Length: 200
Image (tube, rainbow, N blue to C red):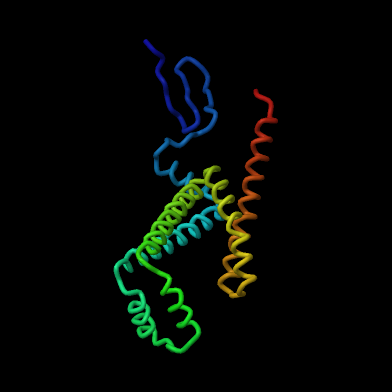
């Protein structure tokens, strides 16, 4: 017969004929409520905020894509004029003239390309957001590369016309860039420290 086993505590197992053997550590069962709560507490606030930022951008691009597709086979000038009237904008203003100039360049093929590009970028943003929330290294590298690639364009836009929105977007992306660089550096340092520890 196998020896009977008595559980006296969460960390101690006592055999009938032997001394107590402490377990190495109390491990929560995978999938249990306590295990999931422990995992949730380990999310880095910075990565969660960046993931939310990327998700918000993805939703914005989805709205742009849907708007572009809804304009297919419609008179763009008529749509723009109705929007101007709804917002009670001055028809003689420079902004309205600028909008009409840009609207004249739109046609169905261009609208389809705008919609496709917007949906592709939205999908990429959702992938980034999910990967960052799950703290995947590939998502950090992907976001770092994409963010860095857009900085020259954002600097160029600010040089052309300085607005608070453009400055705010540039500052947000620079903060994201530096945070991800710091995160990847910390991850690499942790790997080097783990490799330097001698095996027991």
